[in-house]
Length: 137
Image (cartoon, rainbow, N blue to C red; front, top):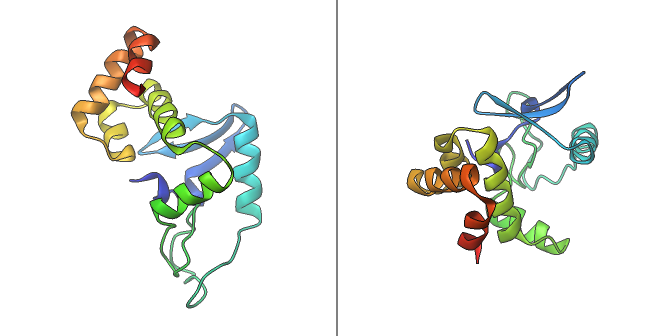
């Protein structure tokens, strides 16, 4: 599964907090992000070009302009940049954070990096953050 393919059913809340379940692994969300996602799900932006989404299709967290399709990775990057959010730094930070909570092979698929890269990042994350930061330089 890719991040762009997350559906609203991947989001859930309970007394312990709000989570996104990624490949059977619930990841605890910071409260601010959880509130934003909850509000986004409650008020989806309908911007489909061709026709309304089929009722049987998935409710993508990042719906695309075409019915039943997620937003493309390039459009997600463009939207982040429009809000002055650095995509490469954010992606690297998200990967390092995910590597501490998910198996490296899951992170490999999720971020579209090789298994070797994911295992290397996991090794660095377990040892010393300085090594990870040196890779981003």
